[in-house]
Structure formats: C-alpha cells, structure tokens
Length: 116
Image 1 (cartoon, rainbow, N blue to C red):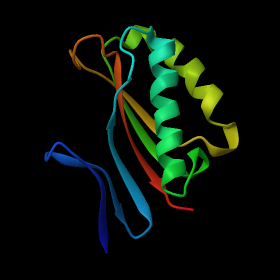
Image 2 (image 1 turned 180 degrees about the vertical axis):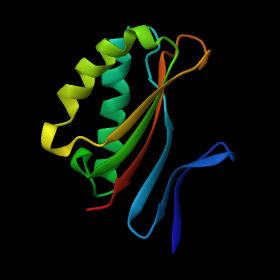
Image 3 (image 1 turned 90 degrees about the vertical axis):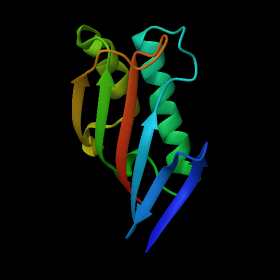
C-alpha cells in the first residue's frame, strides 16, 4: 500500500511510503544566509527530525542525492555529513552539481530510508 504524508501546497507530498520504504522529497535549508557547512547541518538535521517523526532514524537511510550549486564546497558538506552519519550506517550517496536552487540555497537533498 502507498501512503502519502505531509502534503505541500497542493504540488507534492514531502514523503511517500511503500512497503516500509520512505521516499523523501527535496529538503532545502531553512536559513539560506548560512554557509555550506551551516546549510548542510540544517538540511541533515531536518532529515533526522523528519525520520524521527516517522518512526525511523538516520541509521535507516538507504540512499541520498544531494544537489549542490558549487561542488567546490563538497568538503564542507562532507564534514557535516560525517557528523550526522556513523561509518557503520553510511548510506549510498550521489552529489550532483546544478546551476540554481533558488536565492541563497546552496543544496537540496532527497533521501530513501527504511522504516524501523
């Protein structure tokens, strides 16, 4: 069964669940005045809180796609990443360079996670 959670402005659902797998739509930083490190911590924190609200956590993340406006800032993102994920629970990941994500937005992230 497919369950759709957290509708957003009549355009999409922030999360769609199928057979215990959570498909999480784009998460962007709440504070776009932050540097890459700050925005990365913001987005990863949002992901952790969202998963917790759905009965899961970062240890259950299977795959993440990160869209970045400047891949030269990937090292700053990686430092935040390592602070949120333990080595034993690192998900598959891709980072993709994009031209624009909106004013001040340096990254957007999607994720796939298992429900606990």
